[in-house]
Image (cartoon, rainbow, N blue to C red; front, top):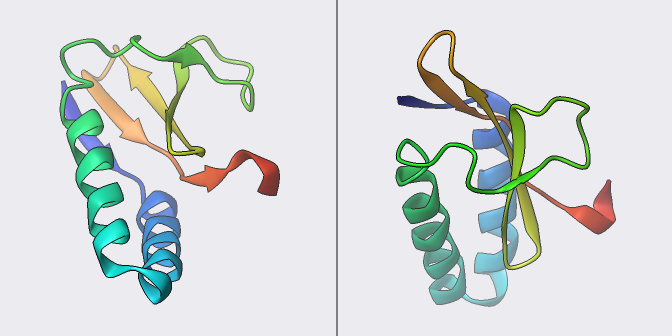
Length: 92
């Protein structure tokens, strides 16, 4: 499956990493590495993570890393995974 990062996700990721980097660039880079790794293996097991609490669709899952929720859509019809957003659950 092809992995696509939605512009909303990319914008929020930049904001999140910039915020973390103000305190610790090392922590921001470490988080980015963990996120990239988990996203890179989604094509092997697209339904690995729980059904999203934020969407009423079985194909939308929540990848959670360090308190950040990363919803993604497993689109089997088009053989792709779309990374939708990143946020802290307390902010939604």
